[in-house]
Length: 450
Image (tube, rainbow, N blue to C red; front, top):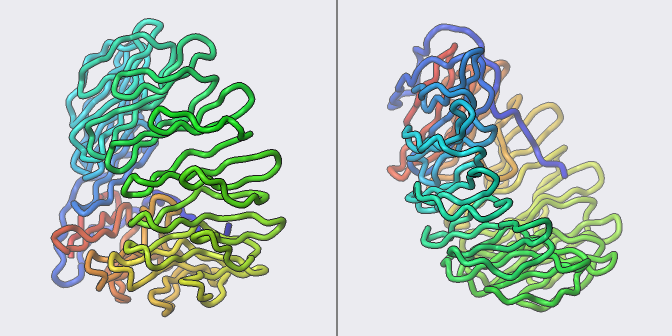
């Protein structure tokens, strides 16, 4: 829908060591980047940047984190490398002989499983869980403790935000599907979706199939089985409200707090404001698209992106297409037209907004309505907002990674920094207010703080 994409890890160019750095910057050499990188995982948090690499050689597989290689294994499960939410911990699934295990913070667990799922950290980063197969049955391992092996299949476990509760989908027999919450299996259905906890961890919801119809189960109570399709439920931040998309015949609608909204040709997943008072979603009306905010339809466009609320819930922004051009709509006001736009980003105080645009063959960042200098590329990501632009916590500073010719640099408050062969992670503003990113120069990975 006119969004901008970029490669997550650019090719390396051999060159000399980095010598010129911006004043007041600290540079730490993390290590040489190995050959045969098969996967790259990044962590960008207020604690800084980290990067994990899965390396495959003829004889073994291993994970390297921030330039430090881990032990060799016979295999690393694809897509299993994960950082905790605070970026301080790392886990992955590995193969040793014919068995599988999970490595957490460099410490391998018992190699006793016939199959294994990707590990998952709780939101507070203190706990870790994963599905594992023992013999012909599946179980869930939580904090190293295996549960009973009684299911024929298990989905990825999900923690509540406080880490105290865990839920997962499980299968008994061919069709007997349940959601297990805190070790207690729920009602059987012909199909179930992944469970979703409210932010306070007190409530849980999931989509389910009963015969040919779909419904949503909230706190163990099934809703009306009258829909031909339902999306994953979404809780408001305070946990008091819940919404989901539903299909009725050929039409789609959004159900908010149990009340179905108007029917359209298509709807997107609903989005609550942080205070839970407002809700928005994308609507398809024939060949047109619009954004519904608080039950009020906005103007029609040829395409729209998902709406974004400011942290205080007072402002809303989204990308919109008119003819062949794209623009960003902020509080109902149209911005200038471009060939493509990325998802808008609000500062924490909601006063500022930034986004990346495409202008012919060039990209530039628009901050508070003012276009910045043109570059050959700017790193952006749809979800999560992994790249840039990114605001500091106080909203006063903004940064992003940009490409100039064959080189990459970080732009801070409109000022370009030194050039590198790649910016592999960041920029990110840390909780100590310093800016951090991980550049590549030659075959070496560095950490820069400013």
